[in-house]
Image (tube, rainbow, N blue to C red; front, side, top):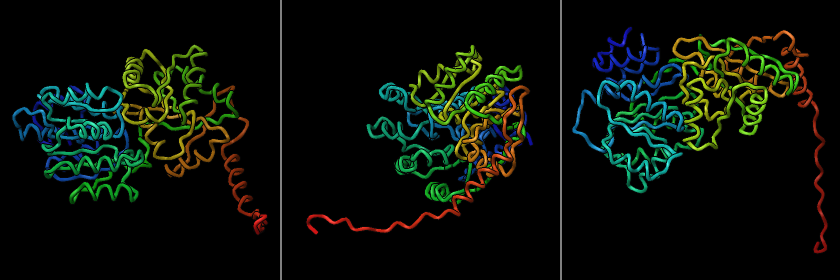
Length: 414
C-alpha cells in the first residue's frame, strides 16, 4: 500500500514526500481509512510506530474537504498528556500541513497564561493542548470549544496514569455538538481505558496494531550485569564512549539520580546534560535543541523525556535504572530505532534491579541476552542471581510469623 491509495490531497502527498515517508506504517494503514470515513476509532499502537501522522493526515484532509471561513474558534482539538508530546504533535501538524493553510495553536503549561491567551485571538483550525492548561483558560473564558468537529486524545493510558481523566471528561462535556473522536493508546488493556473509551467514543472501530509487549524489530536489546555502583559507572562510560554510540538517552528513575549521573559523566569529560520535570519549558526546549543538534552527546533523563521525543539520530537508549513497569520500559526504548533505523537498548543491572528486569522479561514474554565487555566482566550470572531471588521468596513464604497475643493495657481508670 502507498499513501496515494488513501486518496489524499496532492498538497498532503507532497508534504509526505518531503518528510521522507515512503510507505504507510501498520498503524497508518489501519487508522487513516477509518478516520477518513468519519468513524470513531480506538487504536492501540506502540511508541515509534507513526501514530501521530496516522491521525494528523486525516485531520488535515478533513479540513481540506470541509473548508470554512477563517475563524479564531478551533475546529479540531488534539489533547496530549505532556508538554513534550504536545510540541511533537504540533510539529507534525506543521510539517504535514506545510503546503497548505492550516492555522494551529499550541497550549501547554510552562508558559505565561496571558501570552497563551493572546495566541487564541488568532485564526485557529487546530488546537493542540495539555488538559490542565486548557481547562484553566476555559475557566477564564479565553477558549471556545463550541465549534469542535474532531477530537483526538493521544496516549490515553498516560493521561489516566497522570490522573487527567476527569479534566478531559470535563473539557469534552463543554463541547455542545457531536464530534468525531479518536483515542490512541499504547495499550488497550485494563478497565480504565475501556471505561474511558465508552464515555468518549460512539461505536468505534477498534484496532491493535502492535501489542504493548512487542519490541520493535529494529531495536537490539541487551543486559549488562554490574557488581556495584562503580562497576555500573564504568560500564556506562565504556558504552557511551564507543564509536557506535552517536547519541544516547540514559534513563534514571528519579531526578536526584539523573543529576548525579549527569554530573559524573561530565566529570569524565563526556558531553552530557540532565533533563527532568522541574525545568521550566524554555529551559527544556533549549536542552532538547542542543541534544537534537548533537551539541550534547548524552541526555540523562527521567521519564518526563520518555514520551514525545521524536529524534531520528538517537542510536542508544541506556537504562541506568531499570523501570518498575514493562510499559514504561517499552516507551523508553522506543526513543531509538525509529523510522526503520536500527537502535540499541541497553539495561545496566545490579542485584537490586533483578526484580525489575524479571518483570520486564515477563512483560516482553522473552529473556534478554546478557552481554559482557572485556575487562568489565561481572562476578555473578543473571541465571544464578534470579535463582537466589526465587529462593528468598520461598523461604519468606515458609517462615510464619508467630501470632501476636493481644494484651489489654490497664489504665488508672480501669
